[in-house]
Amino acid sequence: MPKQPFYAGGLCFSCVRCSACCRYESGYVFLSDKDLALLAAEQKMGEAEFIKAYCRWVAFGGGAERLSLKEKAGYDCIFWRDGCLVYAARPRQCRSFPFWDSIMVSAEAWEMAKSGCPGMGKGELHSMARIEACLEECLAEPVITRNNKADT
Image (cartoon, rainbow, N blue to C red; front, side):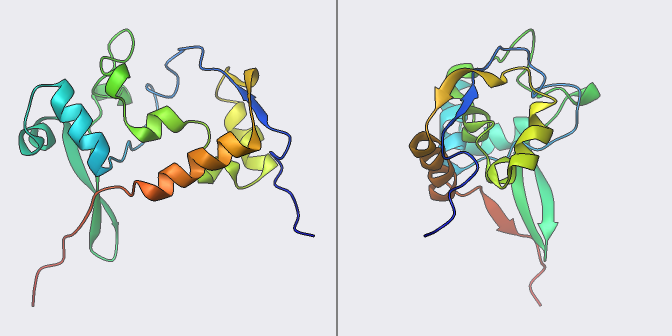
């Protein structure tokens, strides 16, 4: 019989809108094609214009780069100002927190992330099915990547 994941009984989480995950710490908000389209439309811009204004390419190894939102000085998300300015169109990465593969890998990783988020371990109970659907959505919406190696 396969071992059940640590979250088999579900996990509690409700965002308390503290903005801790949006501010103060460096991090990347990687975008999928769907994220880019939603955000560009929200800002009433074309995608190329949006990328130029709000994004940066981040080295990911082997010459590959991933598209990420920029940060303001002090590491605040470029779309944070007394709250999320694009909440209705926020990227999947933001919508799916804390149910990321890097956090759901183990109970220890969950507990470590929980120490920095007052909404984790409290509020709404998310079933194992809901958590796994969130993880699958992440796989179904890969982030935008480009190869930055010069052709030889």
